[in-house]
Length: 281
Length: 317
Image 1 (cartoon, rainbow over the protein chains, first blue to last red):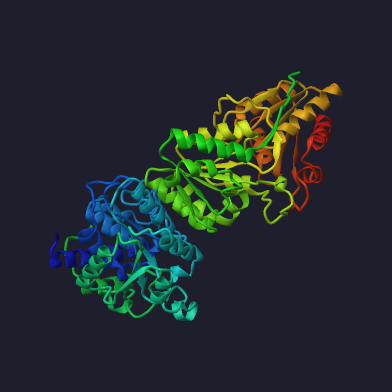
Image 2: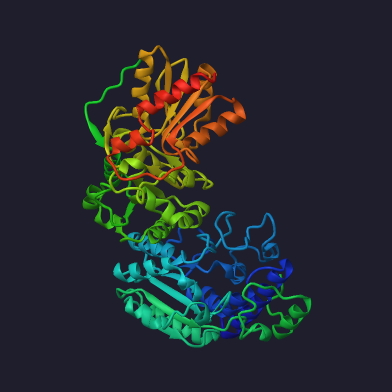
């Protein structure tokens, strides 16, 4: 297991990767990516049980599905730094002939990705299928998912949420990135969703909250609690309170960086706040 | 001229149900999903024999398509079952992203296609599904013609690795294809040799094409009839070879002429052997309530409509 310092180093380096990727092509989604960096770093480097290499089926290992595919920069960086593909390939993000498409896809065969996502609201259904296949296969590993909070406005999620508890899919941990922001502004202004904890509980899920969703120790502790709740007849929801743009001061406390890349000066400022740790690609 | 007869009428959806039952016994990776239409899709036998391999999703087709994609990731061969309308237009983006673009081995099995669904009316009578599904890159589109062919197709698609749309219907129709036929995806079946006109038909219209060919024969017109059970990939070679002999063609389908088999045939011929063609299908319209026979007649989908189209195309040779 990596030390906390090692996880922090990966986190800072992942932030740099995200910023460089979106800066180079002047497009992509840094805000949500930075908000979920600690979560994905902890998930892949501390929490999930993973096999060496990649195979599509993911039998006898934990698997992860990114439903809010627009935060592909953080997903790609974490996968590359974990060894799924060469870190250098991050250089090709969003370029023509790249395996690192704007939104994640299996189409170009990028190791670590098992489904296309980007059109929102589909990831939980896919995860339910994988979770049920695992049960049929006698595989006791866990299926993890990540969803945006705004993404829950898509109706398909609620079909999946109802099904998961109704059919006792208890090998699923669905995490909601609760940053209270979406493209057009605050979720409360765009479409108020009320209390998500109450909603998931009303759908008969186990719910835990991680209030410090950008704190590695809080994430690890909370996710271990979530894991301890699996296998007990109910799906598990983690409400992860995050700060969009976390780690770059001018990207925080605003939804402005949802889908906007920094310019040269902004990149330099962001780098000053996140000095190189593992080496840039 | 070859004589086609039938001793019984059966619905094509029962061919699907019986094919699925056989798969349940022979292929342990086959799983089935349904969105609250088990009886309509004739899935009961499979479910009775393999309860652990059946997933009742409830009335939530979008979720069903995603779960099917996930089961495919987990190494299963999922067969989804619901009406054709709810298998396509309702869930187009789910199929596009999670199944087609992601290249998942999902078999989308769609019953009650077209106007022959009958009395339920246009809300349920999808006439655009072939078009929608054939436009998805990599999607195989199959529309078998009778009980035996639907059963054979159901079994055959389990052996194919990739997404498939299998379209069938509600009413009882003549069973005329052999029980032991070999079903090869993408391989057209010649039913009638002829020299004056080629009729390519799919689904319920294949039988109508055979009846039309007999009527034409009585008028001294020799019609070649080809059963195009696979609309994509289309057996272009069989079609081109036939029209080189006959010089004109009629396409026949229970589907909008915009986007269906006819347009695929026209594209194939335009690029290799331009040929006069007439289209039997619905003419950019929705359906309505009625009996299947009434609707087939009113919307120009029966053997009389095929005869009329043949007489018209012959004048353009």
